[in-house]
Length: 75
Image 1 (tube, one colour):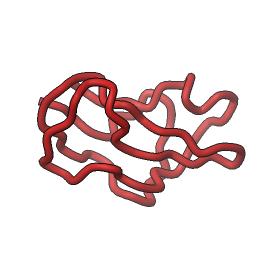
Image 2 (cartoon, rainbow, N blue to C red; image 1 turned 90 degrees about the vertical axis):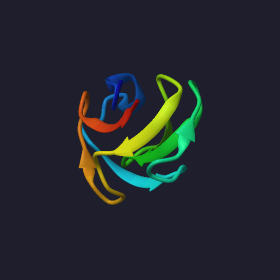
Image 3 (tube, rainbow, N blue to C red; image 1 turned 180 degrees about the vertical axis):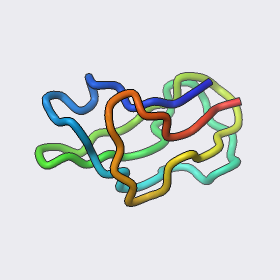
Image 4 (cartoon, one colour; image 1 turned 180 degrees about the horizontal axis):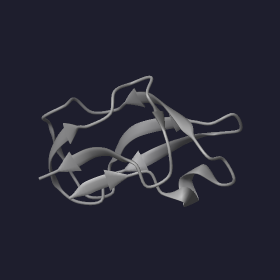
């Protein structure tokens, strides 16, 4: 399952920085677990895992991400 950046996380912002991964690439995650932090000019928000499984990064810390962009996959 793709992990995407929902517009609801960004509010009125059009992009954010992926400031930190909170789990290691290849680790097991559970649905609803905080897996990454995004930082906009106004707020810092957590991205939650949409499913349980093994996470694989698509984006790296420091990348600029936009709404609906895939940042990871959970299999």
